[in-house]
Length: 300
Picture 1 (cartoon, rainbow, N blue to C red):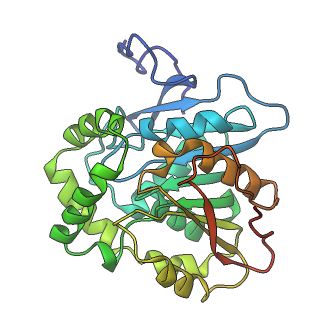
Picture 2 (cartoon, helix red, strand yellow):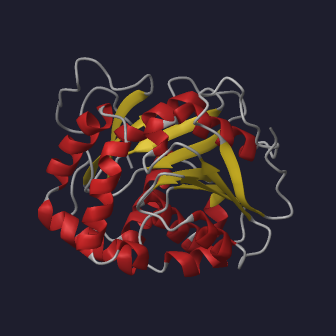
């Protein structure tokens, strides 16, 4: 394990963008021979709870920054690029969902983090579910935003159609973040990672989880089943799952609706009712899809 370096790659100088992508501090560390790039709260809050944001398929953590920044003053925040993604180095063996969960644990070990809340988007959600399955004592709470994978995204041509339908529903500026990440990730990695993502038993693992879990869905997300199907699935669990639908949002909620998502996460973390803000645009509202009996209801 090594100490983080904010301006250079471990062992070799590396130029960072002239203008940092966010207000979080950009750092490097080296884990098992792989350079890992991550962002961290510039100032650690007093008595902080640790929160790590886990990115989606083919992407870096950059598109998660709008939400992460809004929570960084209240939580000791980390936004890593997992090995093989974004600016982090690649491993010789191709990573799958269990490997990425192990990579997250290795990152926490490297940073001296014993336990954290994990916030994931898309592929990051099954990574979190696997993390909770293998290391239940290392995770405090789980926030699953637009979870992807499973039979609903099979086969690949169907997933491509879903992504194509989602693209025009996202902010135009999302392309400036996502396209360079996808190009860097590459076609061979995409094929292998897609196979791992869609074969991973996300639903089975989710139903086995016994920790407070928030699931946030976009009402306009073509990559997920209809809300009534999600409610049907969530009803198979006990009282640990809260499912919220965000009207007007598609798949990349962490990027497109950071104020609303940060609000939901903040309320969930403090066990408070989730309330709609009257200052939000008229097409943006929160709706409860499923609530375990221990979760306060949405109000407003």
